[in-house]
Amino acid sequence: MAHPKRKISKTRRDKRRTHYKATAPTISTCQNCGATVQYHRVCGECGYYRGKLAIEKEVTS
Figure 1 (cartoon, rainbow, N blue to C red):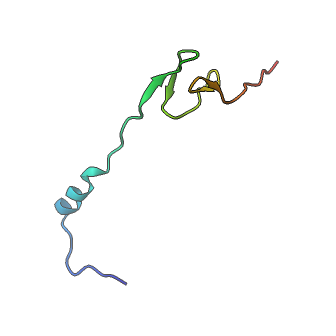
Figure 2: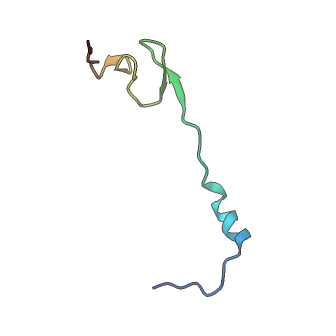
């Protein structure tokens, strides 16, 4: 099993980890109903994706 020969300093470790950041998801508007939707996802309001019905909403009474 690999074993480090020397201790890696906190500065060196943190320099390597600077690229691991969370990014905000890209958001667009639904072409059908105008709700805000994350890219490449089906609209949660109307069930449309790229202008076509992907999921039919069930009506609960």
